[in-house]
Amino acid sequence: MTKHIKLQKDYTKFSDGYQLKLPLNIETIIPKDDSVRLLNQFVEGMDLTDLYSSYEKINSLPTRTLLKIVLYSYMNGDYSSRSMELNCKRDINFMFLLEGKKAPDHATIARFRSIHFAPCAKRILAEMSNALFDLGEISGETIFIDGTKIEASANKYTFVWKKAVTKNQAKLLTKLADFVAECELLYDIKIVYGDTVKMKHVKKL
Image (cartoon, rainbow, N blue to C red; front, side, top):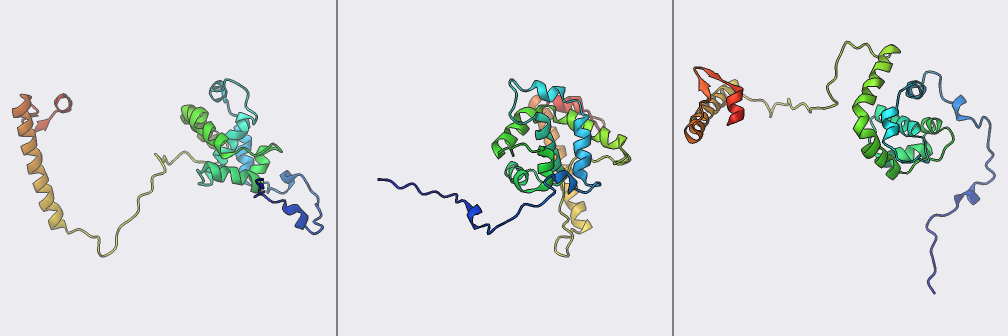
């Protein structure tokens, strides 16, 4: 007879008389100036018609709540669905956003992001930026194209001499000229007119 081993144990029996203490409402514990309150406020006021229209049936967890969880996690630089699931079980701010509802699993979060959130993400994030601007949280003076980070490489072993750059640039220009001449000959297309290369002829090539 096969004996089933229960891997997940019940650790409550080792609690040794742990006493719950008031307040049970976690909303009272979160500081008034916490960013999670701001996020909750403007997501409640957002028009999510596009997001709701991507569902064929009602989800067990409100769509607006899932959006709050994803956006708040993004605000904190965390993009892992498994990490979001864990935070919903352990982090008081995520519990505040759940409003007492059961924490979603990582598969639910992943499906929400790829199937429902992704098609209308640009509009939702644009509305999010507008809401933050109206609230005075961002100035609107600086535009960030994306979150790309380029690692600096400026130690004494990675410098390049100006002479080497000039020499390689001259070689590259020669190769380009030869390549253009070869293409003109092979495909019977005139690309260079005087000293100008027209993009429409490059596209044709």
